[in-house]
Length: 313
Figure: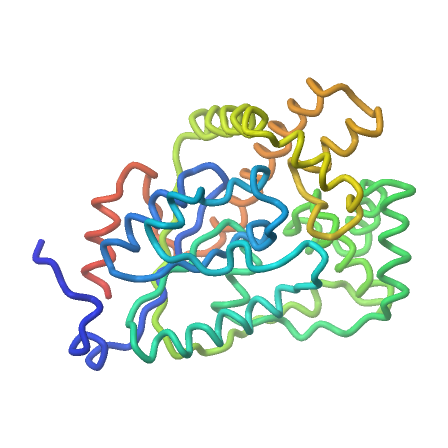
């Protein structure tokens, strides 16, 4: 296949800019594939993993390592502190602002991650959801602490079964967000979700990565073991004083926080991290499988992916 200079001015003026989107479950190999694609198409990577934004969370979020960050330019990695408030709406605007400038001189960018809601926000826009009093949000967060997240999930199942079937039921922030709107408006959260989408001034090509479930689950288990060897326990200890921060309501940290509080042994915490990560991967696949625009590849088909993209850009 003849190599095209995707960074050339001639290519830029003759083509509408393209955002390549790479999605897939955690541990499927998105980082490795995206770096290969960034080299092939001479472009930069925008992370759409909502946990990798935060500087304090490194081992437990499986961020690109320093060597990988040198191999291709990355954005939206280590750009925030856990103490900063940052919403999916903020991410949408920041990415669109970045792309508006980026596409003035470069024709291609790469959006990579497993946070489906954040990717959808960039590609389609956010829904017009009512504002909710801050006091109500904190009231529901306190309920989650006292009664447990499961009690809120049950309430959501009763009051909005449609959104219940879509939401990550272990993501405290998402469950609280839905319930605060439901309680404030007396309407299902799903009733505010749009059927239309915003037009963007760039083309989109979506690639999905997958592998056999047994292989993916084995990779997840091995990754958790590696995280523990790399110092996840110590990282979680350092973050424990801030355990109620939104960013830390996530797999890999919650289980260790419970261990620190004597709720279960370290061995059990590690097994729970593995189990909950496998469940998270399954939910990610369920989310992405709903999108008919995604072209799926096995995670070892890098050459096929390159060829597929090159013929469509």
